[in-house]
Image (cartoon, rainbow, N blue to C red; front, side):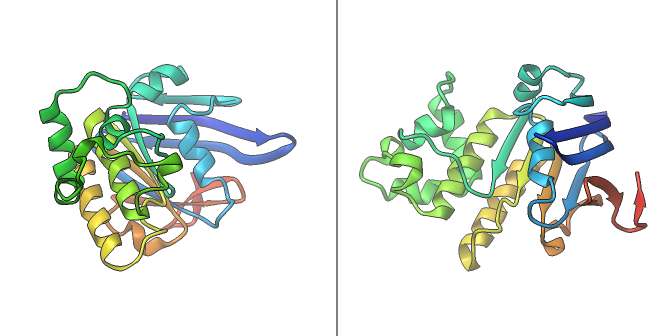
Length: 218
């Protein structure tokens, strides 16, 4: 089992956000979770990614249960890409030792190569504070290239294309397809049409996880 969640409950202060969540995802499965904005979807992904530690219950990802160990097994792409005030290359490698060939392959898979080739400084182009010198679509593809280069077995997608429109959204979707190949994937969205390629879809409502097809609590 790639992801195993048992009896997970999570609070922000006195407010219960997630209630007794159980979830099992097999290796290579692609699951989706729909729900209203503010309903706890992003919180669940942050728990699955090891950014948050569970308060009650158990989370195991690739057999790891400690947040630091979970983080090594997971790559996450969020709605608003988090970029560092550094170069494109540094944002992809995140300080890890990677060959130029590995970085170039990640950029090709993330649909970045042509754009980078058009830049005077190429991979060394500074992205600005919070990625302010690149567009939203470019920032998202840099984040996808980072996830591809990490080569983690589990991919978590948090509304990864919802802030993009038109052709940019299609380009990023193609990059995401390359990222997800051969991986275990969990995607969250408030738009069901964004989760059409999932093996299973769940609905997060009232802090509880439901099977969206049968509307039963699992």
